Image (cartoon, rainbow, N blue to C red):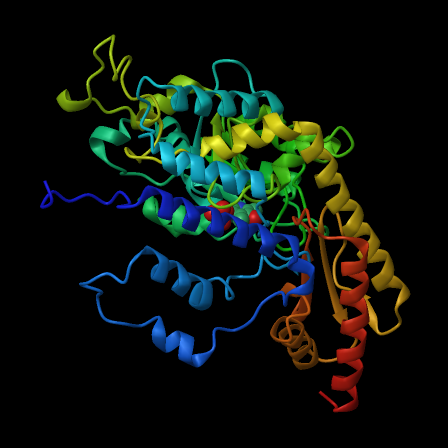
Length: 471
Ligand SMILES: *Cc1c(COP(=O)(O)O)cnc(C)c1O
């Protein structure tokens, strides 16, 4: 019947040509990244084109793809590139890109139906549990990012620590959240959304290396005299510092305080035999959250939360309704397991890219890449220390180097902007002790020594130009 509609291709052979072309184009791009600029600003005409009226009539799939090629594809964030070191953004890699296509193609509903994709997600979560050395019986969930993974853990922690039925009664008391000045901004957002208010944040004084002072925290807990929640960090976003997790675990045990670790990237040090000493004590946390789209190099989005007490995790989110009740057999089997561990009901198959990549390359490959990134940070630190014009702005405990060109904040800001705008490299910035710093974060599996050498060469060149112009 000609009048019946669908979104499937009218001509499958024709569409297969387009699909293959799209794959070939993206692979060609990935093969030649080092020859491309790291980042380019979206030109004004393209910006204008990307602000158009609702397309009531279609232009066809080939034309839509052509528009992607000329309007979108040349102007992404730039984090594909070997010289992208801004914030904490990894590159992704072709096998995982392919897995995302396959996941979207299968399009399973990941609330926890009785199907193979659910078994794949359970498998990935269990691998993560083993790598983080959490006990059997711990539970976990894959989430869109570190913010959501941390938030999910805090819902569990809040409900367990409150001492009353938060789900029935709502929040009606303060809970102390112990954080440091270096705790990532998700924490403030989260306690606000959790109904506890940002006043519940207790900022624990820091040691000179920016980690939480365990002595000061102990005193705060004693004077508070009631349970609370510690938000420790493995790998701070500014300089990559890790709190003394072992000592914090002891303190939390002693005071009956929930021990949560934000290990967005730092937790992954656990998978490297050479680096795991940095996160010693991580396995003692009540909950830990970490990204797989940072230091496991997977494309956005994928993160993981683990909760030691799996029953507590389920108590926080479990919700039964007649239309999603388990039926023992059939599609809905034992109920919707993943929906009972977080806020989301419909979820995508983000587990597939992790499952395929870990099977294809093995965790040891990822451990070697993490070690390579740490060595790159050490190398850059050494080069900065050798250059009279440059100065190190902070210690380098992990994979982040903060440095400056000797001179004003204005000079350093202009230097950073020129590196980005000329497409040379993309570090980001931070301000440490009032000083504007260039911040280079290595979670990039494409970076090579030559890229770091180029960064230094250009930073010295541009810095000297700016200094000559008295910036
Ligand atoms: C990136 C980061 C987050 C937030 O994770 P998203 O994946 O961006 O939501 C939280 N904490 C730390 C330490 C981070 O580096």
